[in-house]
Image (cartoon, rainbow, N blue to C red; front, side, top):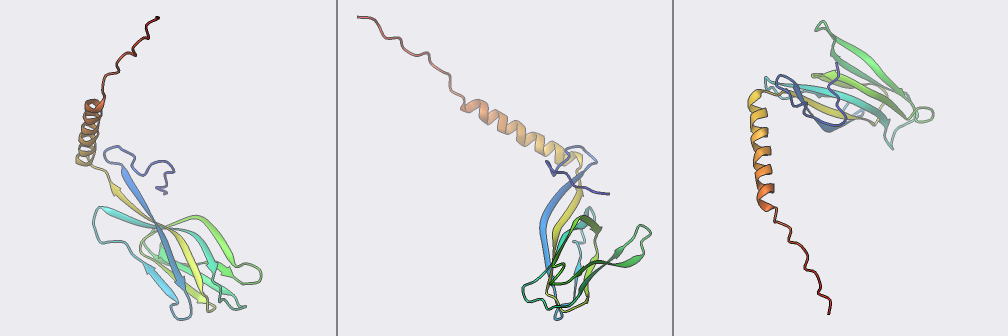
Length: 163
């Protein structure tokens, strides 16, 4: 299930989801071999991690670097899956498209010493309720009233008289 919407992050209908997206990035290495992505504990928000790229860093050695992701499947069971096997000579970067996972998600450098940068989007979905919509409508009405007050009448141009 994807909440991705190219043009608008607010669907504008009661009971629908509002989506906000933020840049996400983490670096995995032998010093920091894993990173766990978790959302806030607020009840009405859902956090997703949309992975886009996995890329070797400048200081990567000539070795295989395997990145694994651990998340829950549709049955609520935790599973681990390798998502990239990078090597500086033949595959220094991989594009994952829009690989979307619900929090919590753990990214692990399963093999190699890195550094490996994983990047994507942190997506936050929330429900739009009627009070949110009525507040927005009130703001729009206020803006329209302000615009009407600022309009000044156009005066006709004066004609030059022939002499």
